[in-house]
Length: 376
Image 1 (cartoon, one colour):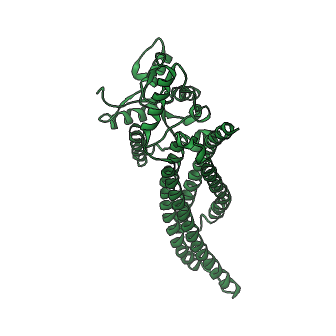
Image 2 (cartoon, helix red, strand yellow):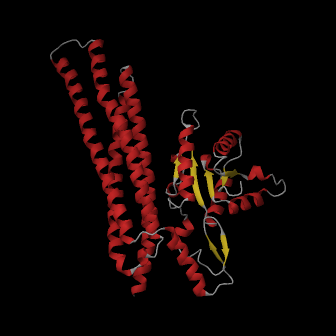
Image 3 (cartoon, helix red, strand yellow):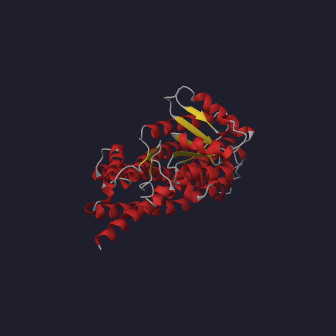
């Protein structure tokens, strides 16, 4: 049992959250040791239990549903200790924009959706333990040298006393820690970023083509009704219903394709984000010879973010237009409801991407400013 990675869970203390905690603890009992402050049962000093629980954990899960101030305080402690934190919430929309960039994941307590959360947490836990996913926090992002002080070297899993080491030895420990994370070089990261950014562009381009096809079908159906009206024919209910049923087919098809595009773009973005964050934490990003390539990459990333922002207005407009058509016919209602749901998933994904881009750009700016200062 001692060899299993330790996971400390911070969440509001009420029945629904504790039921979720019990489920996660049971589902992962063969793989991880789950604890929370309630398990430690220190009636005299709950804060001590929380601090020690976070300190001893390999990974922290923070449920920010409801924006509970105690949970945010504990999240701050976890970030200050440089822990790998998996953020979950029942409503991404209520989270502060900058928090979304730290791998915030939305979940539902509906019976048929809870397994999706379990699967996602499993992926993130193993990614954290195996160092396949890069985690960070505002401290390491904006004060990169904070954990390289003379007293402590803080990692995600432990705190090493360094007071007995001379300066050269401390630097060696830090460099060895960085080198052990990844064997990739600067252009390995850049190539992965460019390859997967291209895949994102291709997915979105394909989605736009399919959206145009759906719009053509919608326009054709609209013209069919208008043509009948212009000829003075009485448009009966059966005629309208058949048009609606016919129209539901391309809408349903687009909604299904959109779901696949969102899944793929999310997957490719995870790779882009992970490579950017890993790159910016390595010595290679802090090499004068790479500064121009790093600047170009940051410019391209900002361009992607601008394109996403521009696309949001058209997607939101499509949602508004779709809602107007609800209530006409059963099959069409179902198709439109599915479409709106998938469009909202797309918007949620792009919100997360944009907040993550802001984080990457901020980290990149710090690295570039440092390099620029060193050349003066």
